Length: 286
Ligand code: PAF
Image 1: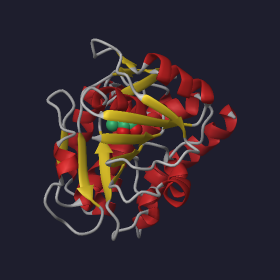
Image 2: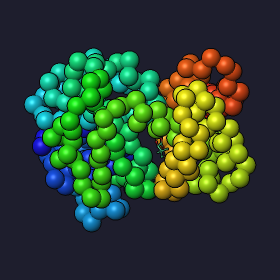
Image 3: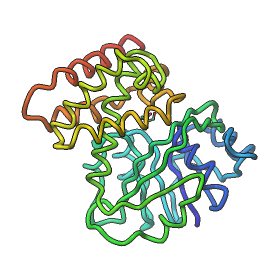
Image 4: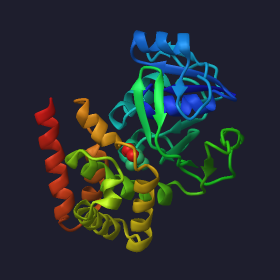
């Protein structure tokens, strides 16, 4: 398949490195230097034996004539990508944290939502470290149906991609993972395994998980187990929010913890605290 990947951050590079082994991958990135690095040397990933060759373009170019578009930009860039760049009728798979981007997607188009629980760290314009093997789960945004061919052909033993019937359950579970792991790792400047092995951070994480499960009407024990599982398998990873904060970028706190608050009819003190604390720290870092 000819696959266009929009976004050259950690997830874009990780997906490009794995999929580029069996598909023709075209990376769309913002900076000329990154485009050149990708074109010249491909994508290096420490878990793969050799660099994966890819084609590279600037994000301003249109993604025409491809079989699948994967959008791996941050939440706040999704609206622009949907309005300006998705001009083909090809299916589109969106790989964002949180649920804020759903408002820019169309149920009547071939829009798919994916949730990623791999740990990934961008180490340079064309190198990524795979810090925790997870999976990608994907579902159609809108009506349920059979697994489309393009999704089955992305699946590899060492890079699993699974189709789910309903996007809601899948996204909400990932939202719970992010609403616990991301703000705490960003605020305490720790890797994900702190949720497993620091009892104090774990205690706050539990409170966040209780609030989120009550709001989203989910069973706490099952979701808490999943949070700890993901924190464990991505233990060596710095969460995307921790990385955004370190690099002076805006975080996705409003699309993650803010989304939970907006769904709740009652006060959520732990969520309110982490939102304000992350914003305070974002300002400090700028
Ligand atoms: O946002 C992230 O960093 C990731 O979604 C996850 C799964 C928490 C791993 O770090």
